[in-house]
Structure formats: C-alpha cells, structure tokens
Image (cartoon, rainbow, N blue to C red; front, side, top):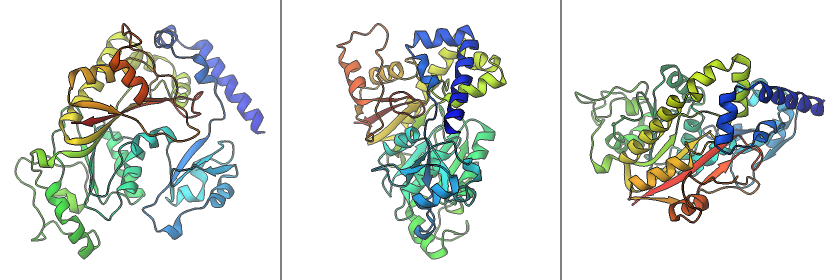
Length: 392
C-alpha cells in the first residue's frame, strides 16, 4: 500500500513537471535547480512536542506511532522533535494533535529557529511571523523562567489572525505580542519595561496581571496598538533607544516558495496563473528580492550589537538566497556570517555561486562555508536556505 501511494505521488509530480509553464522551467534553469528535487516522494514529516504543557502530558514515541499508525522516530540531538512516514493516518486525526500536544513543523524551518540560540531573557523579533509554527517553537524554547518576549509582525491580516489562533490554541502566547504591519517599516522596540515586571507580576497573578495594576507600565500616547497581546504586554509604553533593541531577529521572508513540493502541487491543482502572476513575472521577482532586502535591513536596524539575525527562505533560487546575503554583507560592514548549526543526517545541499562572482571571491567563500541549503534530495526535507549574521 505504501509503495502504491509513493508511486502515485511520483506520477503526479511527473505530470506537474510536464505541464508546468515555460516561465517556471526557465526559472529552474536560470537558478541551476535540479528538477529531480520535485520527484522525491515519501519525504518524512515532522512534529514538535508542545513543551509548554506539563511533561506528564507529552506524548511518547510509542504514543505517536500508535496514533499515526506509521513509523515514528525521534530526531537525535533535537529535543522534542519526531519524524514520521506520511502514509498512515492524517496528522489532523492524531489524538496528540487534536489535544494540542504536538504541532507540525518541517525540521528545516526548526533549524532556522534553533540558529537563533534562544536564551530565557531574550527579546525576539519575527518580522514575517505567519503562519505561526515558528512562534510556537520560539515560545517553547523561551520558556517562562526568564523575562524574554517574542514580537511577531506580518503584513497579512488573515495570516496574523492565524498566528493568534495558534498561540492561543497551544497556550504559548503569554510572552508574545503580534502586530499587523509592514515588516520593512516596523519600528516598535522590545517591551523592556514590561519585561522587568513579567516575572514578578506573572508569579503573583499567574500571568493575569490587570492593566491598571499600579506597579505595571502603562501605554503612552503615540504607542502602536498590537493586533493581539496578553495583558502583561498589551500596554507596554514602547520606549526606544539602544537598550530596547532586540536580542534576536528572524527574517523568514516572503519568497517564491519553489522549495516546497506541497506549494508546487497546490499551484498545479489550482492553476498556474496565480503562480506566474505572483512569482514568475520579472518585475515581481525584482520586487520580491527588494522586499527581502528591505526586511533584512530593517531587522538589522532593530537588532542590538553583539546579537544574532537569521535570514531564511523556502526558495531554491540564487537571487533570493546567496545573492541577497552577498548584497547584505556588502552594505552592512558591521555584519559577519556565522555557521548555521545543523544535525547529523540532514546534509546541506550545494551553495550556489552568485552570478558574475569568481569562485575564489572571499565573501562568496564565506557564504559557501557558513550558510546552508536544505532540499528534498540532499537532506530529505522541504527546501530552505538559512544564513546567520552576527552584528558587531
């Protein structure tokens, strides 16, 4: 049965590639993307345990195997993550999923979050936070012991609403605030005044501090109203200054999504017109890379010195990945690349050379040695590019 399903998926992908528009095939050729990445079937899927719950509620490997009715195995050296073969029950039908004990997240995206090296007192800014799995994982890693917070921003109203639903569903939003806005222009600094009271007030009221609490900071005229925030963060006075910059920034930028097999299948089913209009038009591609660069630049502006910014896309193109990193390093002399931590068994694919750059170019060599590219062939994951910058 499993083999028959895999063969059926392979036939679907082959049909997609045969009927894909010429603009997409040209895009693959120009970016040296092997069409075989879309022919890989039976990729494992991944879930993370919601560690915000009491440990006694966490499902075990055996629990998940019984509920999903397929092979399940833990990811070595990556706490809380499990892989499973996708030909059993649907994840949404799994009891652990329905009771909010696990959430789905590709391991490549999880490694982008892990690259932030989150600490309990970190203030984290996610400039493209939808659809919300990153927020859930970041909240799990941040925990409730320190004074750290998460600020999520997204330009899409319905996608930021999805983020809110996820945070509330998994009960991980007590240190997180959401803003509906343009990440290239977002300027609200970290909620450092509220953070100073989070541990004390949270302990006294079990996280349900009233806005009129005399000890709690109050919002000021001109403050940007969050789309959603818990009581502990809703009325932060939003002070500015270098002390209120963020400790970690993640820019998981809007992109062409060509590294996701599921996205390509979706576009083929719904018709290629939207995909061509949104992503394959030359002007749209130029605008997209400009958007990505502006997001990176603004994220850098909001980042403290000595702090980390992670840039990622689920595209396999050179322009949205290596070329953007090269541009960023050229325009931000206070930025340096640091190695992206990976896991055994998840091998990075080949880092591409930026057009018109010599193979021995020093910056290009830095990119090749410190960035990673995940793809279905090399790592058996969805496609994802990750770069990790340190601000001097």
